[in-house]
Length: 478
Ligand SMILES: Cc1cc2nc3c(=O)[nH]c(=O)nc-3n(C[C@H](O)[C@H](O)[C@H](O)COP(=O)(O)OP(=O)(O)OC[C@H]3O[C@@H](n4cnc5c(N)ncnc54)[C@H](O)[C@@H]3O)c2cc1C
View (cartoon, rainbow, N blue to C red):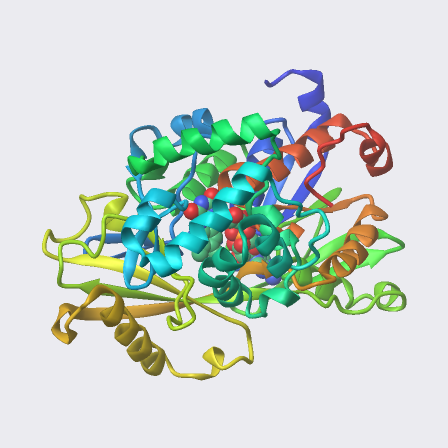
C-alpha cells in the first residue's frame, strides 16, 4: 500500500471517529488501511460498545446473545482464526409453559399446544402463507402483524413481545419495527408460496437447527482484534475519552471536546468526523451550539434499555435452545439465552448459566424497582416456566444496558429525518451504526455495511449531494 498515490494523499486527512463499538472500529480499520490518520474516542475503558463480554465462574456471557450468520464470514475467519466457532443452534418460544420451535413450525405447534389454541393459529398462518397478505397499508406494528400472520398469532406471539421490547402498546409502534425484523421477506406468486410452505413444513418438521457462528471467547474479542488491527495500521484509539462538546461553525464541524476520567478536557480537530454515538446524544451535543439551537429543537426519539440478569442454576442445562423468546404477558422477561448451548465447554458440567433480558424505559415501573425485587420476580417466573426449585438457583448478578434498541414510535421517521437533513447539509460529519442511524441493526451485516458504505463514500471523494444523487446509491449512513 505504501507509495500508492491515493494512500499518500489520504495521509494528509484526519478522521475522528466518535465511539469505538463495532461501527467505529470497522470504519477505522477501513480508512486506516487506506492511509487516513484515524483517531477513535471512546468513553469507556474498553472497546466494543454493545460487544461486551463478561467472564464469571468459567462462563462467558455477552450482553444478550451475539451470534452471527455467514455475512462477512471470510472477514471473521481471517480475524478470529481458531477462535471462530461454527455451530448448529435451536431457537425456541416459551408458550403455554412449553418450549416450541422458532421460527414457528406448524407440526411442532400442533404437537405442543392445545388444539383449541393451535388449530386456529395454524389455520391463520397457513391461509396467509398460501394466499398472501397485504401489509402495504399497515401503519402500526399491530396492524402489520395481524395482516401478515393473523389475529391469533398476533395475540399469542407478538402483541406483548412488542410491548416488552419497546415499552409501548403495539398499536403505537410503527410497522417499521416489523419490516426491519422481516426485511428479507419477499412476496411470491401462488405457486412459489405453495412450494415454499411445503418445503418449510418438511424442513422444519425435522426441527432443523440453524447454522451460525460465535467465538470461543465471547463477542468482545471481535472488537479487540479489530482495535489491534487499527493500531497496527497506525491509527489511535483513545479510551476513557468522553465526547462532551461538538463545535459547529456555519454547517461545518470545527472540533470536538473530549473529557477524560480525571475531568481534564481538550479539543480535537479533524477534516472529517464520523459519529457512532446514539443519534440523540449526537443531537444534544450539536444543540449546545447557538447556531444549531436557533433553528432546531430536541429530537423526540427514545431508546429502550435492558436490565440483564445472569443466573447460575444447579442443572446441567435448562434447555437445548440457545435462546427462548417469551411473548406472554405474565413473564416480565422477553428472552432468555443460555450460552452453554453455544459453547458446551463453559462452566462446570452440573451447572448452567443464563442471561435473562428485561426491557425498561427511563422513568417506567421497572426502572424504579430495586435489583433484589426484580430478581425475585424473575426467579419466580423462571421457576414457573422451567419447574425450578428454590435451591436450584445459585448466585446471580445484573447489569443495565442503556441504548439497547431504538423505539420506533409512530411518527418517529419525521424526527429522524430532521437529524438526517441537518447532517446531509453538513459536509464533514456523518452518522452510522446501529445507534447513529437509530436502526434495529445486527452486527454482522448492517452495522458493518454502514461502515463500509461510508468508507467507500469517503474514498470516492464525492460530495454528499453527488453521492446521494447516484442511482441506487447504497447509503446506510447520514
Ligand atoms: C441484547 C442484544 C443482543 C444482540 N444480539 C446480537 C446478535 O446475536 N447478533 C448480532 O449480529 N447483533 C446483535 N446485537 C446487535 C449488536 O450488538 C449491534 O448491532 C452492534 O454492536 C452495534 O454497534 P455500534 O458500533 O453501532 O454501537 P455501539 O456498540 O453502541 O457503539 C457505540 C459506542 O459509542 C460509545 N459512546 C457513547 N457515548 C459516547 C460519548 N459521549 N463519548 C465517547 N464514546 C461514546 C459507546 O460506549 C460505544 O462504545 C445485539 C444487541 C443487543 C442490545
